[in-house]
Length: 114
Length: 196
Image 1: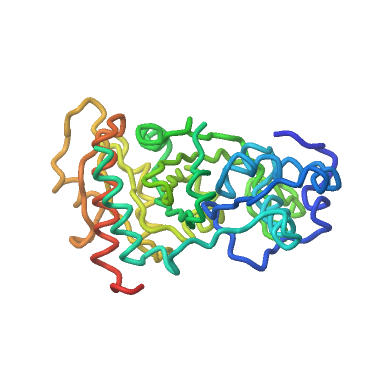
Image 2: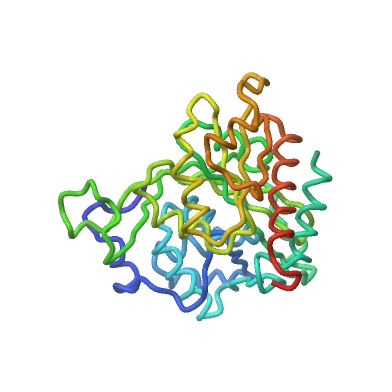
């Protein structure tokens, strides 16, 4: 894991540990455009996340893992980046993970895999 | 690496769903995730931080706020606007706060068992029976392609409710894994209201 072992993780978030949005580990994050100038003004950790999101919609867990930033800190930083319009938190098309329209689509997709 | 960025550019809302793969250490969770994942399963020593919560009972310091845990997950693109994520749970019970986090928002769970070490998966069965609202099924991993104990015996040994589906899976095989995941979500459909 990267990062300075002498710095407590939540120093990066100003001590904040909670997010307003429900950010699941599989919640997708995306960016509609990349603003190179805005990127230079970000802290190194936020910049890593912002750079990575350019590749396409990715889950919170993927971003955390690839950028080497703890899940909790990643959540707070992503929400900050969303509130400043750097990126979008994608709540998905369905309200519930048990929505039968969603389940049906996933089942159909998996059946084609076999 | 392929990202579903084209769908995003077309203005499609990309949706993600999640299935949790639970079970004891060494029962084949990583193998199962790898068999269908399009990305190398991410198995990273992630720093899980739970401020203000004593996560690690082994810690001799109550001020300790971080603990290291291996996260294990994979991804399957099912359609340009639909991704399925599979998350393996960390084996040790001391990571239970992490289980709650992983299970939040999941559409279903598969508890994987190895009949040679059935007890390794007891905590996972207990968790989904008592501590979680996520519908689950139990899958016996056929290590040598053989079922060493009848499913009936496995059900008895696990004290598993008749209503919980119990199936066999070859976790190395993509088709077998996909079929198990279909069984899992079909069970969710049966046990949840149409408009959940």
